[in-house]
Length: 278
Image (cartoon, rainbow, N blue to C red; front, side, top):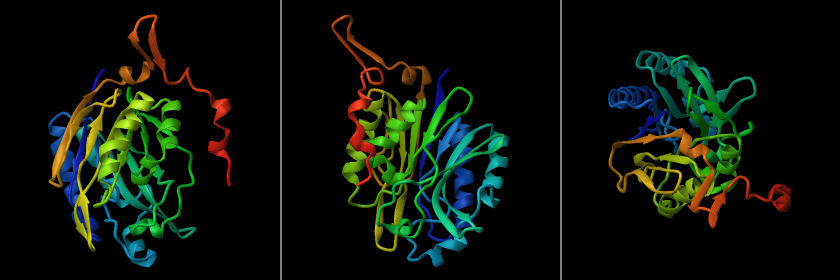
């Protein structure tokens, strides 16, 4: 069964969670009206990104589940859709703050992901590195793995999710000027090398001197574009994906002569240095 997915490339107001939540709700309805069953929003779509301190960002973070996820759960229930929303997750008991993504569906909050790889940029300078393993979530026929922005620059992220059964890896992101080559080359490579679908959803607009470039894209299992934005304009991208394609890792170019299998052909015993801590 195919799934229609959507990526919402949108502007975000720094520190105006109420406005951003309302914008997300409007776009969620718009995407659902066009048949989307999974709608993906950018990194930090709720709070914005370019905070100058943890103290400034903390009031715009919230627990999971929390007020925003509860509101969106009601919308997902009404629309019978799933959504992935970038946010800041607060853990009041420990004082930790994570750059996070919430996976919400008709049954409510399904999972949260905490960004594992943190660049020295924006609010990531003040968040705690993700402390949970990469995980795959079955939405009822579509198996989804979550990553966030800089995670996409580490091939291990998508590879672990592929090995755990992901059909689709999503990457809510905040690519600013200077990240164009990441958008142009890395996303297709991650899809191709893992034989999975990949959806990178960026924001637009300007925050504290940073311009965000858009360039969201949805890529199929062979690394080809299903939907792509090459501008910094607001847009909802749509693509129809077939999970079975991602599950068939055997690629037959010429029967009996040219066959690839990106799971069976691995040599894990040779990869030891990848997990050594220097």
